[in-house]
Image (cartoon, rainbow, N blue to C red):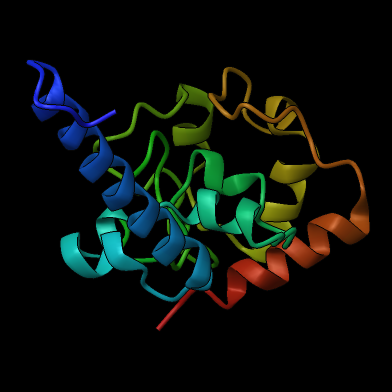
Length: 155
């Protein structure tokens, strides 16, 4: 396989690359959801994929579907939607960079537990034109668990 032919250098490069990738994947899989793996230790917390780790490690917590769009850790890079760190009792439409619907911006106020519950029960009814991908979380218990978890995301 690794003869002195013209492709020997390419083969060695592929082998070294495969070994390096295996080391990175192994490091990430062995680290916990909140523990830094090799990538996050080398590049910083903004480069860790919490969703990847949660899926691989079997985490099915209350915010499992949220992390597709929202960052949960205040140090984590923003995703396609505003981060959820400190969301409970925070002002609605607080991220200046995000294109909130006019209905949500018009709501004003803060994200109290009751407001979050109403929003998560039916985002499109609460704020018509919302960009939330999920249509609703109809289960009361699931919403309570999610909101209880969101309350823990603070200093």
